[in-house]
Structure formats: C-alpha cells, structure tokens
Image (cartoon, rainbow, N blue to C red; front, side, top):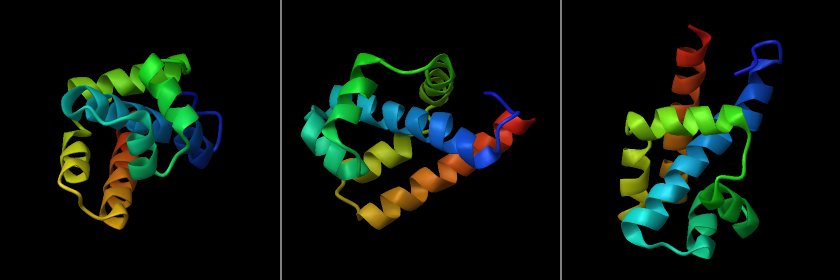
Length: 107
C-alpha cells in the first residue's frame, strides 16, 4: 500500500474495499448470497459487489484481499452476517479488521 498518502485515504481506497471484497466473495461462495443481499448487508451498492465478485479492483486491493482470505481474517464477519447479527455489530467488526490491517501494513 502507498504510505505517502494519509492513512485515512489508504483505508478508504484500499483496506476497506479489500475487506468488503473478501467478505462478499465468501458470502457468495459459501452461502450463495445474491449480489443484492450482499450489498444490503455490507451497506454498499450492488454495482460495488459486482466489482468485488469479478475482481475488478486495483493491485493494492487484490494484494490485501489475498492476505485477508489466506489468513481467514474476514471469516468471523461472514459468519456473523450468515447468523443475521446486527448491521451495527458487523460494521464494528469490519472497522476493527480495517484498523488491524492498517497497523500490520505499517510495520
């Protein structure tokens, strides 16, 4: 990830989309969620989910998504969505994972 930009821009441009792409892919592959259902649960538009599922994003997002997926970092978020937990709890878990990835990336 480019570290010459302010950290919040890195989160918005790379980290958060990578987390969402990882979650969207798992929801679609493991549970058969539709793009519309994924979008509703993640609070994004369906077009974004379509991009996530087709892999239409930057190299930074691709790299981070791979790391998230390999290390199963989004699994608990996916499970909470599948169990129907609140959007507030899911958003909180996504925020925590983003924070964790920013710290790991800064090392």
